[in-house]
Amino acid sequence: MPEEEKNNNFLTSSVQDENEPKDIFRKEFFGVIKMLFWAALIVLPVRYYIAQPFVVKGSSMEPNFYDSDYLIVDEISYHLRSPRRDEPIVLRYPKDPTEFFIKRIIGLPGETVEIKDGRVMVKNSEYPEGLILDQSYLDPPNRSTYPNVTEKLGDNEYFVLGDNRDFSSDSRIWGSVPRNMIIGRAFFRAWPWSDLGFVKDYSLSY
Image 1: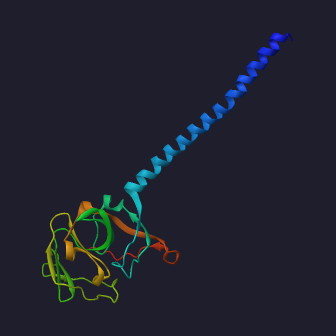
Image 2 (image 1 turned 180 degrees about the horizontal axis):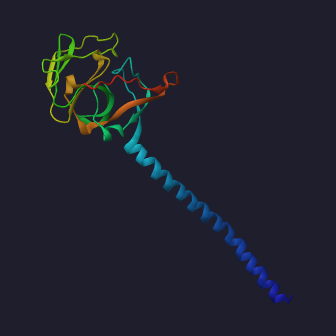
């Protein structure tokens, strides 16, 4: 082989060797971008439309939820149906939407909620004279609730209370919650491990 041809082959081989790391880097870079794209495509809709995490702060929902409990909030159910009475929900604080609370639904749109002499009653078309709610999830069950409050709910308004009635800031203080402030229902506890599992369902159809 002529000397000139050997030199040309050597130069071609050298150029190819120099380009190989660049090609590998380019392939890996675009591979990572593609992976991130698909991850975002899957994760973001889940995060914003199906479920999201929530960490309980404070004692307002004891004995059912404790400070630092890590919950998964079901958002998709409320795109398919309305919130139900006695469901624990995560909501935006109506006075400051940047804050998030966990409370339990007591009154539904169009109802009148009356707290009197420690008892919680709702009045609606089915129970015009009022129905005293069974609140077996409290500790002790059906513990007294104060102070006396009467609130007529408008369309798309909900009345919420904390389970730890003596230590909860809720609708007794700051009024009803608009439907668009409700994020979703607490349906799974991921922490602590000792309480891992689905949240007990006390929801009622009436």
